[in-house]
Amino acid sequence: MSPNAIEVVGLSKSYGKVVALEDVSLEVRKGELVSLLGPNGAGKTTLVRHLYCELRPEKGFVRVLGVDPCNREVRLRMGVTPQEAQPYGDLTVFDNVYYAARVRGVPRDKAREMALETIRRLGLWEHRNRYVMDLSGGQRRRTLVAMAVVHSPEVLVLDEPTTGLDPMGRREFWDVLRQLKGEGRAILLTTHYMEEAEALSDRVYFINRKVLAEGTPAELRKRFAFYYEVIDLEEGKVYKVREDEVKEFVAKLRGKFEVRAPSLEEVYLEVMKGA
Amino acid sequence: MLRELTSLIEMSFRQMKAYLAVNLFFAIVFPVAMIFGFSYIVRGPAVYYFVSGVIVLQVSLSNILSVPQNIGWDRENGRLSLIISMGVPLWAYAIAITLPNNLYAMGSGLLVLGVAVAMGYLSVSPGGLAMLVLALLVSSIQGSMVGLLMAARIRNWRLLQQVSQIAGFGFSFFAPVYFPLSVVPRYLLPLAMLEPTTYAAQSIRLSLLGDPASFVWDLGTVVYGAVMAALASNWGLKA
Image 1 (cartoon, rainbow over the protein chains, first blue to last red):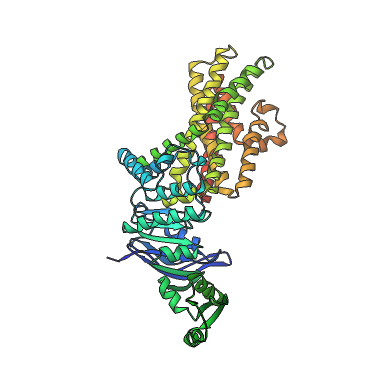
Image 2 (image 1 turned 90 degrees about the vertical axis):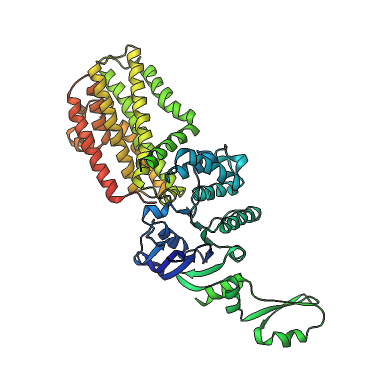
């Protein structure tokens, strides 16, 4: 049996003359959290839409838990938060989560039990009887995630779930993701936030219509770390120094200094610049 | 799939609860007020045109206007994507959106009739009442299909809002709904026959009169609705 929860092979997609994806291959293993990073228009959402069968591949194929995601049975084993999707504002938090289980075929009593449990786990208990339209942005996001996980899916696909959240809300959301990952689910996350990818991901894909780089955050930083930042704390100056010149450079400094490898964000910018 | 479908329908009814005041206003207060208000100036044979017209307006607003607006709003908020991702076929979603609107329109239509009869404004035979229920059913479904077609064809939310509002009201007042089809000039007849409410209005008015000719118009309503459904299915609802 394949260890891959998600497998994308040679996926291509165009909108008229605009190429959205070109021969993209990636995989997410069971129990792994993988982030997709790329600029706006890089094809991240197009790729994600293939994973739950909103789009069909022009070339290549997609498998989720070894099956074509257009198979309804496999979508019942997935949880998805599509980009910019909102829960139903005219339903309460409980109803949103409860019906998310019901429409997936969960029996009434079981759905009720699972909805209450999920609401409690995601910190929405006090708000369970409030209409979603009366909640904050962060609470709506949590409700959406609760709708995606209420039926205990094996695979989670989250398309920019933290966009628009304040730093506090984002950190709280990270805790939720860590908890879900800890439960052994495979998670694919698309995000614009490098620190988010770095803090949460086992592996990262940089994409811009095609896959530009792939690896763990540490591997990518190592692979693309052509220079170090040396901060002279006495003078308050920052120098970019080539890897092979670092020792010689710091030897000349008087007083305290700091040497820092490029962050994932700097690596990302470097890779995108070269693409 | 039946369980999923019934859950979706149940969910749609729950959503109505959030806007209970406006739903009750348009289902009860608005049509009743129209009947009360106009009953002093609309008299004689025109009464049947007027009462059937109010019923058609309810059918049109509940279906031709509301169905595309509900779908468009859900699409605008990414909920069609959400529905697909949950493994729910969009046809099931379409039924869940249209059915409550159909029932709402039928209930409201029967209420209008009940008020008109209670006021002694008109009388309807039991056979006529049965014909009316059938006419209301096919007209509501036809209206929903027109709404579905609009939602399938027009993906721009702003445009869909405008078109559905114009259609919802336009088909109620710029079609032979409150006046006889026979007074429509010959050169405008083809246009009138393209309007869904032309069929619904004749069918509902004739059923109030207990005239079996309403069945012919029912058939026309069904054919019209089927063409709309086929076109909507051809284009398909997309997220």
